[in-house]
Length: 118
Image 1 (cartoon, one colour):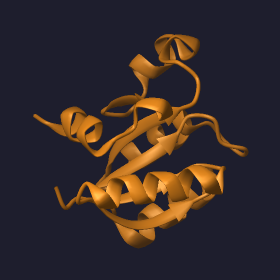
Image 2: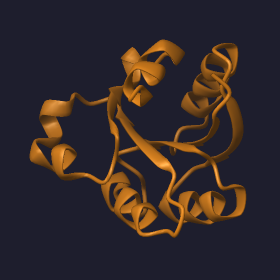
Image 3: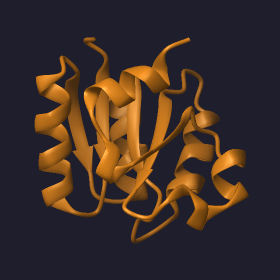
Image 4: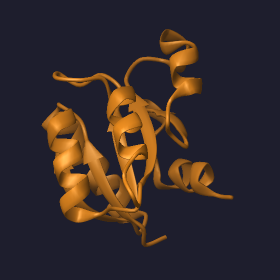
């Protein structure tokens, strides 16, 4: 899979890990951001097909960022991620403007492909 990806997470170590993992699976990581404001700016600048978006960001929730991205004229596909379990977010994840959720511990190119499959 050669989809372009923007990785958004406030931990640089996770961004490096996710970049290596996804690039090994054939994804093209076009950029990174450390917070919600950066996510919105970089998404507009880079126009990635996919935004891998941490739910818990320092300035605004990833769920709110996903909502804002969904209002763009050509919105990217948003995939939420967190070190916390989906259960901890409850219905907020179900209502999020995102394709789905992958726990950080389960992130892989294959998991992302399964979520993106029609």
